[in-house]
Image (cartoon, rainbow, N blue to C red):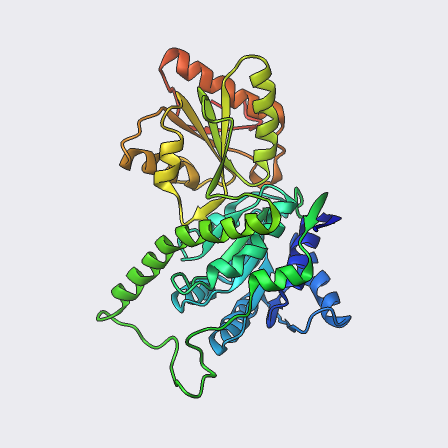
Length: 398
């Protein structure tokens, strides 16, 4: 039987980490993820876990400690946000290239500058091509569940890649929701014991990690990483199926909400999906066939599956909470549209940049997007495929 608790997103993440009881946690505080290592350090001090907690002097050192721990054969976790993730930049790539299944709780926050402590996805988008599996979370419950599944995915022999679980800073990280916790013994059984095949402290198999890798081998090693990311898609679904049997909660690569007969649809990630569902329900009550596709797994990107899910929609809007500053649209928009093109799905699609730096996105804003899509369906014209939602500048939304 599950345990009902009222927890913030950060508390939910720390609770999942406590139940996992990793060998090593290394972290440095940064808003809005500070509470995760703070709560976890309390679990360490009161004996609730036997984790080695490493209080480092920077985020670069936090990821370095996790790399060293995983390379030695230990299960390692960390948490960070925004500029903290940026400070980890060098070690983020090293962690994935060494095939170390570190798990990170990333509480999404705008990357400086200018300095901003509120939510958008610019931190996650900055490392989208670093070789990390990336799971996004609409709610506190989903953030908790994603962390419970994370090690099973990352440590799978066909994957062996680091994984980050994303949730929206303040919006979910500091908001309290009622969530269903899995019992400690069932979490322990589900997550299992980490038994790496190759590790530095194995005296029976001396190995080196991170040697110079020049023209003769680097290409092949990167291709192996790419294949592992492809393999991760299947493993994510297998682990999710097992998790559903344990909890009754079903997760896929993405969630389709009233999409089966939709004329217009929005694609988005994280907490915005909750607002969009409310708007979809309201529009449906007025006779508008609106739908939603919530992306849960951003890396590996389920391009073919998303393209097929959107094939019968008449117009699509992709909402990005980060601007790629490429003059062509956000990163999610680029991935969705390229996936549709490659899979020969041709649906009018527009990009909306929204919520930058914590700009509030209300149900009226989401409804405006659906109304814009209805206009595209009616006229057959897209006057501007790269738009900004909620800007104060007059006319900028168009």
